[in-house]
Length: 139
Image (tube, rainbow, N blue to C red; front, side, top):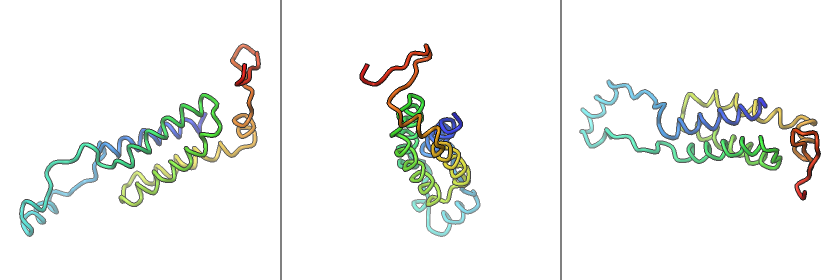
């Protein structure tokens, strides 16, 4: 459960970064200095709707992967791990402070998925439906 929560939080973090809700501080004095030296066309005053499209795609993939993990789809753990690494690298390349948070969420998301009991559960073809009956994907 901690793994799924970590993937959900990581997906939300990526979406927030992707849509630019957490914008890095521009430092108005630096913006004014660049505008004075290079002219007003050198400084953009409007932010794009999608600040980081890779972060949005990674966020959506991580949210979908978390929901599929809740549904017992074991093969999606590989997709979640790869998307998590891509998300951390995207944040790191962008110099975002959220990189540290993303690394912690990535570790918390991956480590429980490597436990033998979780691996057996996600690899099994049988699950219980809460009624105590065991069903397979073919029934």
